[in-house]
Length: 475
Image (cartoon, rainbow, N blue to C red):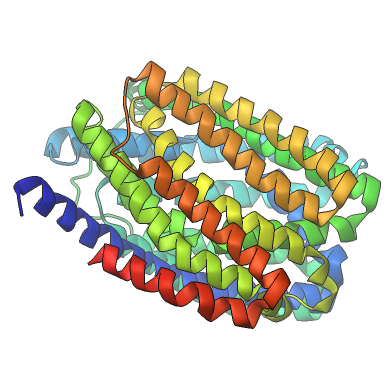
């Protein structure tokens, strides 16, 4: 085994270790979220799930805008400076000061603008007080994300895992009684308790062995201008993406009602969040590592190709289980009222391979600090999202949404690959595109066989050979 092989093998072990840590932590976090969602579905019905979705999507969009995406843009600078004690400590001080400043400013803006936010989200001002209360969530979220950026940039992923674990367990213990006794009036308090507890445990587990550097607001703003400039571009792109998601949710709410929103959100959560545990765990370690090698063409190609290959092999057996067990999963996580989303869930799972590959490629744009190009690719993705989801849902219902999800990420993959190849003159290691298409084909065959043979016959037929091959690849 040569030096490069040993490096890749070591990287694979590290990534799988991170995946194991965060996979376990997120599994517990997801179980807590599942319990909360299950209780909302049982106690409040699809309308309650829809209300949760509207509050979450609206506040998430505002939070991403208010924090200027500092939680992502700062990781690049933190990772590059963590081996330089003085520069690293200064960067951490800047990130923490800016997080506090942006958090307080965002909270004040939401509190003052709550009538307009309610009008935008619901078409009336009935939820003005609810959004005014949720302004505190914004402060909690921005402070939390700032500390998470420091942990990621300094490779303190175990601390981040502990903070996530304890916050999830504590939050569910506090939110269940609120939902039980207050029912639909408990939605806003539940969201506040969840993010408040998350912020508390993040501060308790934050990186503490970095020398404290006193810094004024003026100096923090000046020295953090590079991070904020990239973050502003990322905010623009994320705002466009979240705006597209928000437009779809509001469109469904106004044309088909809150039940349709609840059903759509449950399906999207299953495909994008629960399967997305793989992406989140991998990216935690991948983005900082990519940022440290982005200056070298060959090293960048190796890191990106390796990450895509690893993600696809991890996802293949996961997608098979998810597709075959989708009916069982929906029944456990929600209820029989939500079976209408099964076509969306099964077909949408085929698109996770394009999503994984496109994410790995898109992070090269961020690692290079190429904010304008990132805005262009994300804006094109948002346009494709709406152009595919609205007409396909109108024509084919939830089956159309599943097809739209796959097509959306296929288009996104092509767009970021064009930037990767023609702007940065980068390529993939041999077989990467073929492997990604094989992952998609494997999931598509699983969907087809499930419809013909039934899910429980298809599961062992597909999972055993694919699982054995994936295990061999890891070894």
